[in-house]
Image 1 (tube, rainbow, N blue to C red):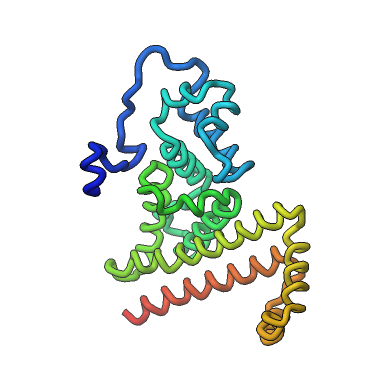
Image 2 (image 1 turned 120 degrees about the vertical axis):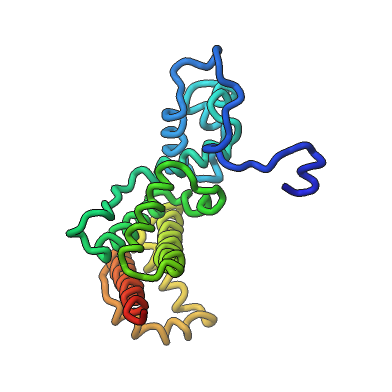
Length: 253
């Protein structure tokens, strides 16, 4: 806690999962519970984005007063943290104890599902790291990931590094993909239309045409008739490189 925080008599916020509710008891609004509030929060974040979300907007969607929501959460951050953990529950996690499942397939499965989470819910990316990430669904994802990576045979003191290499790559890839989806939708274009428009403008601009000309051969060799195909090929091969890197490091001992 900072000096200013101590002077103000405040304590640093930890997590909605660690802080007890202070207003439980009789008089709570009927028809509401945390599960419903969280589900509506997720729906609003998906439809309108993080910047547009507010307690007032949520209350209007629930057809209650903003104060009614405060019976169940203390702050807007509490709601965002609950929503973040809720969408982690959408993933169908592999069983790392299944003997006939190769760790490579399970790691690819986890990475692919995490990418889909980031693209299906663009607001997840800016919230990642903002909270402790100790909700039940988030912890289960972490637990399964650790167990899968442990099966690779990589040394104990390198497990965290291997997880970072794979999932920070996926985070960056999924974040950029989500930005592309959001930007093209905001302009009323498909991803393919937006990509063609952006490339046409960029190749005509003197400041960017030269670099793009150098990249032309790479883009043509990349293949893919659509943005979806290009991104899928890039993601799959990049993930294969990371898996191969883990295998190589295990072989190195």
